[in-house]
Every structure is written in structure tokens, then in C-alpha cells.
Length: 431
Image 1 (cartoon, rainbow, N blue to C red):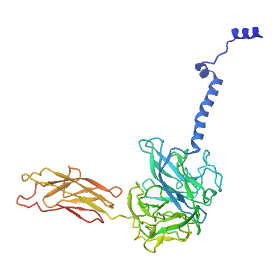
Image 2 (tube, helix red, strand yellow; image 1 turned 30 degrees about the horizontal axis):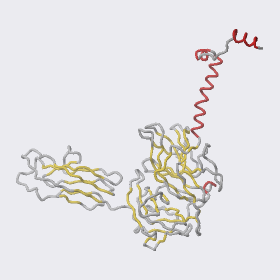
Image 3 (cartoon, rainbow, N blue to C red; image 1 turned 90 degrees about the vertical axis):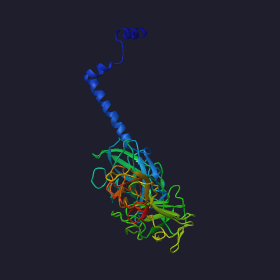
Image 4 (cartoon, rainbow, N blue to C red; image 1 turned 60 degrees about the vertical axis):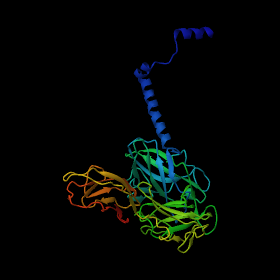
């Protein structure tokens, strides 16, 4: 046997075929093509499985509702990361579970993104819509977002619980997102890095029970009401819900649910010794804090409405808009330390500058020059008025002022005011 093996080795050496041979041999080339095709296919299947990565909470509530006839919207703000930069994607959000208890399912590691009806919101926040048949191929059943130059996107997402077993009281639901390209090919299914506990409406105390809370008109439609159990607004909120009217019909809501413009609806836990102590309004476009109100003991004045350990089930506790006005009063600030202006007739003087700002604005900040002067928001273009754009309720900048070249020589200019104005704000006069 040893001699036979020796003769085989000496006469027929065995070795791997060189790459060139693999490419030129038809059979080998065919096998290589099959292998090459399988690798990306396997990678694609793996990417489509629901994984807890690349989807990070910015602001997510602790609790959400359950039940077929007591459906409630739940909103959260999150960052999707690791995508192709400056690229548009289709998506929808639902709720997934990672346990088989309480009627739930193990969704992680599968191609199932969970259940619930997506509450779709455009990137600008201008439109809401909902669907019971989420899809990345049919118009009206998905929304889109566009990543930044780093391949990330941060925005508001939402969904509505259904009668699915995943939304059984006591279960932990992980918001999920299904992401596709603009051709409708699913690329990723991702679960958020934090979960939301499901509560059942109940008239009894209990760790898995909740009660209905809503307001009269107190906010701006399509923004978000964020509800905390502390006055500082720290930690995760109890609930995040859209401010009506969002112009999207949510089916099978509790009877006390209101869609009146400026109102909001939420579920809060029955086991909550602090009650509701802070209610915020946050911008749907950029998460700016628009306004808020607090109550030191959770018992809101008009009523009074006691939110400490409630047991009212689906009977609404109604917080008056006067107690929780979420729209802050617009305000303007500015201070001038100008010295004397000197020039010759026909030539504008050198400009002097100072800072102006506004908060909780609904319109731009406008500075108006007194007679004989000109103002500018960019230090270059001067006129009788200068405008500072507000974004998310805030405006700020450097105001330049100069004596006009056409100001009468005999004029008196040392006791006039620059005025700062904006819709709803008290006018500020700057000497």
C-alpha cells in the first residue's frame, strides 16, 4: 500500500487549481458563480431579520395601551443610523416582542416586525396618516425619510396598538421599523433599544393597569404632548401622544377620546404615586420645547383633577387647558449701547451692532428703524426694517444700525427707539 501511494503521489500530484483555471474551466466557473450569488443573498436575508441595532431612542414613553376597542397612538423619537448617506428610504413602524409569554411572540431574529397599525408621519411633520395594512410597496401604507451626510436620520415615529396578543397588558413592546429602498425592497428590520410596557384600562390598582387622561384645548395641532411624573421633565416620560387634530382617523379608540384641535389623549399608569406633574409640548418638526406647565403634587387645580394613583379606567380625567397651557407666550429681548453716530450728508454712517432674540415665537422677529436710521440683519443690506427668521419658535442674531446718508442735517436723533415686534409678543423698544 505504501508503494502504491508513493507511485500515486509521484505520478499524479494533487493540488488546488489556480484561480485562472477556476475561471477558464466551464464547470468550475459555473460553481463559482453559484457561490458568489449565494453570499450576498445570505447577507440580505440576515439584514432583513429583526435585530436590535441601528435604532436608538431619543425620547420614548414608558407606557402604552392595549385592547381592540381601546386603541391609542404611541409616539417616540428615535435615530436610525448606519444607512447610506443622503439617501431616501421608505419605512413604517410597529411594535415587536421578544418573548412568547402573554400572547406575545419572539420576533427578534425573524422577518416579522411585530404588529399594530403604523401611524405614519412625514419628515416635516405636516401630515399624519394611518394604515392597517403596512407595506413598502403600496402608496399610502408607508412614509419616507432622507438620511443626512452621515447616513443617519432622527425623527418622530408612531403606531397604534391593535387586538394582537403582543399588546397584552404586562408585555414589553419594542418599537420596530421596517426600512426599504424607493423600489420597495426591504433592506432592514430593526427594533428600538428600549421597550414600552403595555397597560390595560382598569378601575383597579395594579402594575399592569392604566387610566385615561386627556386635555381641553392647550396645544398646537400635530405637535406632541409629552407627559412626565416629575416637574423637571427628567427620565423617560409616562406617555407621548399627538396633539389633535392630526387629520388621521384612528379606529376603535376609547369613547372619551377627543379629536378637537389642540387637545390630546393618553394612558397613564394606575400605580403612580407622583401622578402627572409636567406636561410639555414639543415641536413635531425638530423636537423643540414649545411650552410646558407643571403641578407640584399631581393634583391639577381645575376640578381638581387628581392624577395620583388613578383608577378611572376609560372614564377621562380632563386637565383644563388653562391649567396646562402648552403654548408659551412669545417674548423678545434686545439691548443697545450705541454711541453717537457721525457722518456727512449723503453718506451713511458706520454701523453699530447689538444682539436681539426671541423665544416661543410663531412669526419672525422684525426690527424697525427710527426716522433717519437704517437697520440690517446681515450687516450688508440696510433698510427701514430687518427680519430675523424664527425656527422652532426661536430667533436670534446681530442687528446693525446706522444713520442714513439721507437723514436731514437738522434732525434730532438721540431720543428715538428701535422697535422689536413679532406676532403675539409684547413690543420691545430699544433706545
